[in-house]
Length: 347
Image (tube, rainbow, N blue to C red):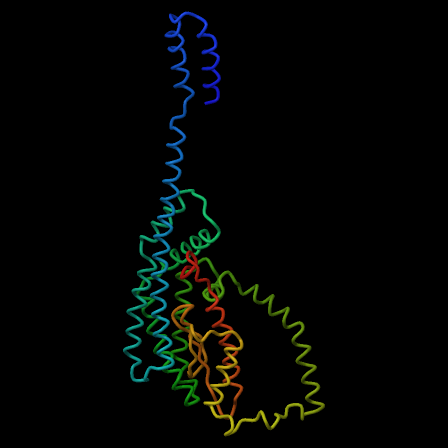
């Protein structure tokens, strides 16, 4: 473009002094050169095309996020069913709850594997438009989960959800009766099903790595072995020193009378104490709740609805306290998840 302007300036200087009769030949010379050097599109056209491309990618990304949020909301409903199952539900409702969770699991899996998600991912990747780090991370995780979930049939997701409820009911009964043999068959079935899911969804990973990845993404058994080895190096000598001290003075194991279990450790008072401790640790009761269950856990439906449980014993007050402190750690992580636009309810 600069060459065109310079050429025209030179021609103007040369042509103006001469007679008007020479302007037509000069113009005939300029036009072909101008056409040869001109842009195929004007700057305005190119800017508009680039803007349209960016807007198109953003629209696809927003549509993908809407799909991912829908998955998150459906999984929140599953979380509430699980919480209710372990906190409120009567044992006689087990069969129906298993069927409900199986039906919902099928819907969630079909939503996760909707081909529209795959199309949007491909559309965003092929656009070539720049993305910030959050967008890149969401796209990466969305693609990874989509590809893995597509390998598994929805029937397997349903089966896993229903088996979870059945296994929990049997575990509660086996625990009451202190009968592991009652629980062993369903435990084995659960493990084998999880192995099957790992093999199908993550065929490129060692089996145990695939299982770990479901709870701690990109962690591996080898890395865990290194971590435990480092911990063991200092922990083992410490345990030995403690054992030696206790052997020399067995009274060190005596529990102070004030800390021994008994009627004074009323579960209702323990619950009040544990709520106060949870608040002091940072648990936000306005966005969660505390209840009692057979085994402590953290559940709920959303960072704004985080539900923790513990259990209380007049004979062993440490159960309620330890359960509260432990679950508060999980709960505060969940409550601390980002809720800003563009971050909330996304991978």
